[in-house]
Image 1 (tube, one colour):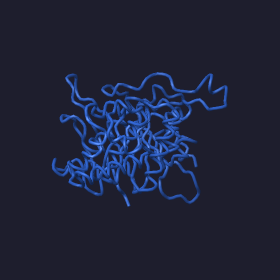
Image 2 (tube, rainbow, N blue to C red; image 1 turned 60 degrees about the horizontal axis):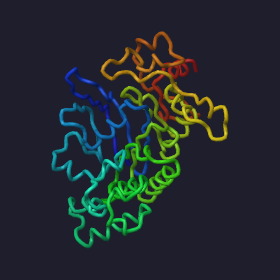
Image 3 (cartoon, one colour; image 1 turned 120 degrees about the vertical axis):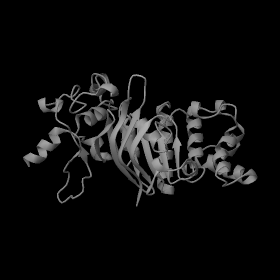
Length: 331
């Protein structure tokens, strides 16, 4: 059953210099108990997309399309209905728990707040639920009496996950949940997220610039560039054999442990993403693309299906690259 569906979602920021399109026509779907990873460089629009799922963007931001949560459009919900949905049906794990947690409020009080707001527990019942949540994310119950500054970065991130789980939501959106952590703590947090999704059947949308982290955590991947999805498909296909040059560059940007050649000279991508306010014509990636054609600078692109197996009828793997279209036409 489809839990979350995005239909042609576009997000535009208003500024004194003019409108800036941050997300352009994104369509994605997430089933119950499934994990979807969204990858891309800084400025690709992935965090803006994450914030739009629960209408957490500035009031003057223009958002169009449809964001269907259990079939109900988040963009048309009243403020009262939206408040009821936040935390209870869908919750968010913010990037950088140090800044997301209130430094002058106790850990337990902050975890219990969603329970009180939604009338799910108060008093002793809220304290018991808080203790359960802390133990669920691998922290002792007595940590509820502490404050954020008394915890390490990994522990604070676990508190954020406990808060997100407090009201037993069906969807969790995790925006760069491990960016500020060292590799050992990152592995622990990712293992925790994977186990929680599997045990509770939670739908997960995970945002990261690290394609390898998403490939190890998520069932499917969507790669964003200049506000659009340029490749989407099963994790093992997108990470192991990306068909869009940008997805390939992301997958190859990380050194391989035990491979001296990749450690000394990791492959990556030169240049910077385009200014969203001044996007190039045609394929937005063509100025940085090592295999671009003359037509890429003018012709529009779309997500074309990538054939991976005989008899496959659904477009499980798609890529917005003219070479995919040419390969299909040649067969």
